[in-house]
Length: 312
Ligand code: AMP
Image (cartoon, rainbow, N blue to C red):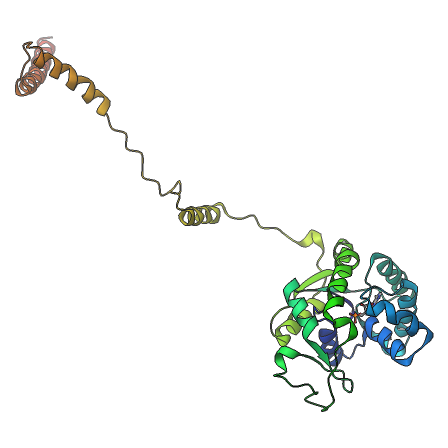
């Protein structure tokens, strides 16, 4: 497993990386943890990074790359790694590619944890940590407790989780890290995972995405929507919008009122003006007798023709 976890601050990269590490025995390599460790130990590098981190900005690429290179050269990383928080911009991504190519350990996948902005704000502002075991909690689920349920130690808030810094971190993510979504999708490595919901469900999705075999674009068939399904959809939406769909519209009944109305006024006019007009009954009778006459005439003609034929 050689993967990168991509996602905004608060998307749950750290939590999911720890779970993957526990299950697959592959180390979580978190650039944020490496930097915080350097700060805590008061190293020269840590002193340089401290102020930048507390302002919600990115630490310089060479410092972070140095830490990552050291960490990946340790024996436990030979069987794989879960990179969490690195890379954070395109230059770091290029450097990572070079480094991994040189050690013959190319990336297998980049998992993007997708979480809405409001959820990120809520998670970051409410995040509390245990200094002893490193467990992560949220004030919303602590029911007012201020100590770690496992260790009993007082929980603390990361300095960069203060509300005034959160906004800056999310802004830096949008400007510098988000372009990596396109960067890795162009390389065919990106897999997006919905990062909201139960931790176990998110983890299942992460695992599925991490272990999925890469699929070549050429082998993906795109099915065209069936025309019928389209019609059904069109009818539904027409129903919703109150419009009559083409299929359900009543058939246009073609009547011939034009003829009748054209004759009626003429007859009415004639009656009004005192002209002699045959009554409707008489008209109908005349039509019937005329029709009968035509029939009987044709019968006579047929009989005559038969007789002539017999004579011959
Ligand atoms: P994180 O724990 O990943 O949220 O990182 C905390 C802080 O460490 C960030 O806000 C940055 O100041 C710094 N940091 C972590 N990873 C990187 C990185 N890859 N490049 C630059 N700065 C980083």
